[in-house]
Length: 417
Image (cartoon, rainbow, N blue to C red; front, side):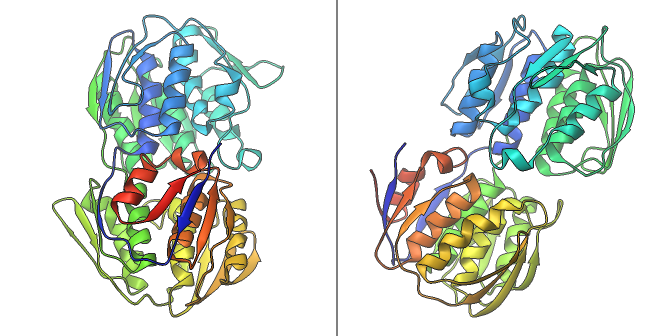
């Protein structure tokens, strides 16, 4: 594990080009296991989580070419195991997406407890209920063990919450199931729509993508397909906040206009000037102000993945901001480290924090406890006086490609230690 040594206190300026959507890449890679034919994904983000998922596919018997590049080719003649490597599963929440393809092609699946951020707080009960509705049954034992008596069957189901990965698990299984599956209270995030598009290219019939009711008719034999991933609006929004926090002028290229609306809306409320033209999102030097109450929401609401970065921006804004993340209890707890940097924070409860600014932050040692708060703490270090030591940096690199190179290109004084 390594750290970043960051000398803060200077505006960052320049251009960053973001890769494909991380949250689309993982389910699309899992979908490649549904066919024996070759699938080709382009504009794949070169990040740690994608590498782990590619290694999981290879562990199950797939031929995977292009790991670590933006073009990944997958061909899986046969899934040779029904239990992916537990050590890899323990590093990636998205490993739960393998259950549907394994059941579809082998009739059984065993999965250790998935890892990723907040593993103790995030169950896969909803995923299991969706698979059971399509004919899978749970087998007692350690981890998660499921079997079928044959081909999965289409089913009508209601998700108790509009879970993104829960919806994706149901879609992956339904694409290979016999008959029609209707998923109500489905998630409608852009990456869910992207999975629907890819499954349709593979031969499944999908209706309602982007709505809370999705109908999908499975295919007895799915074919190979190619797909170019859309730009990652969470990564783009992160770099936009880095520009706003440091008082710089940053251009972020690669994300779509519609997806960036949610970012532009929050930044505008906090007095940050932005423009969008030809897939380039520009942040101009501004005088941020408190945003009042900012609450995360399901798409197209404020993404939970950005709330940590917005919290850091609030430390540099004039006035108060109440930030409410109803989804994850531990994400805001990780930001208590900002108090030691001089931020004025009041943690109301595990989901709400009040920030009063602006406050001059001071460099210190920072612990990247999860992916998004790790990037937020990097932003805090970049605007703080003096040096900060941020680590382990590998936590942040799970979702941000070439982090060090992009920071240096923007003018940051940063080194890997």
